[in-house]
Amino acid sequence: MPNGKASGPSMITYEMLKHLGPFTNSLLLLLICKCFASTDIPNLWRQAMVFPIPKPHEWRCQLKNTHPITLLEVIRKSFVKLFYNRLSAILAAHDVLKGGNFARLPGGTCRDPIITLESIIHDANHNNSPLWILSQDISKAFDSVNLTMLKFALERIRLPASATTLILSLFMNCSNRVFTAYGETSSYRVRIGIDQGEVISPLLWVIYIDPLLTVLKTEMLDPYILRSPTLSSNMMGSTPDIVINNLVFMDDSTLISSSKAGLKHMLSITEEFYALNNTSANHQKYVLISNSLPLTTTSTVLPVEFHLSLSSLNDISSIFITPLSITSSFRFLGVWFNIKGSHDFVKKQIASECNSFTVTLRLA
Image (cartoon, rainbow, N blue to C red):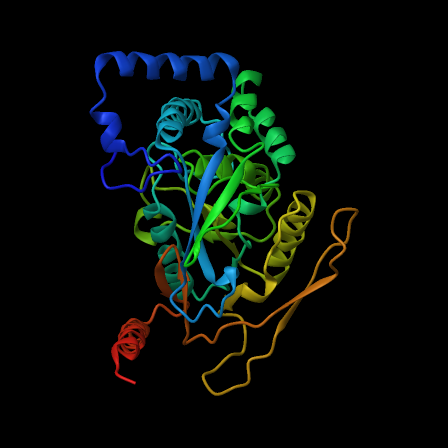
């Protein structure tokens, strides 16, 4: 329980919990045991405060231009943290999730996908291999989670019914109030989604998205093959080639292919999943970059059309995505990459970030 964290509606802090006496601790333990036994939580724990933090640009009085932070009761968060620690350890120990998104699991780190993407770009440049990369954007990922579909996802990994009921109870019949410059708003009922401030929410998103990642992993078309170095390929026990068609960490998803057809195949699959789960994909924010497109720094960049496979779940026939120039950089997990692996783009990126920062300090 870290110090200095914001409290929930009751104003109880972690520091207060750390100074509880033996009698109060025993009462708290009884309450937690009761929650586990009844697979439910007190109604007061369903109330929360939302603090909208403006994004680093003019927000124009639009909530979409803010990062809403949900402040939950710290006793509830401590209870959920206990449950989360047990569940994540079991999922990791038994290799339950097959999609490759190991965020919020013991040992899960964003280091591996970052290094893998850097290795793919280096390999493509070294071997002149075709490479297509598409970064997807899911609008308000946690807010779009449908509880009915989350229930199916939990049942898919054969989570006990009592555990499933307890998880769903955390996000049912909840109400929020919003901090504003003029005080708190009246409470409103939360209809859909999981709280971004809840400690178990990132793990639930990983479980929620695992069916999609599993299908992408089993139905590969023209994936990128990251080959082992030539020197070690002639040696006994050399590292086998790695077949990759996506890199995902939390809600940061990047599709990777060696052809446009492979990318189109994966886009058709993802659109079906998003439609089935009522998830909104922001196509305007998709980022496409490839070394197989005739792009230069001076040419006009034209949108690339991807013809998707129509089905009962997908009625989108095509998507137009404007690719980045090969001299431009793109961002994955907070790290900037360049498709040509050039060191110059790093200098340009640093200069751009510094200029952007100094503009905010410049006097009017």
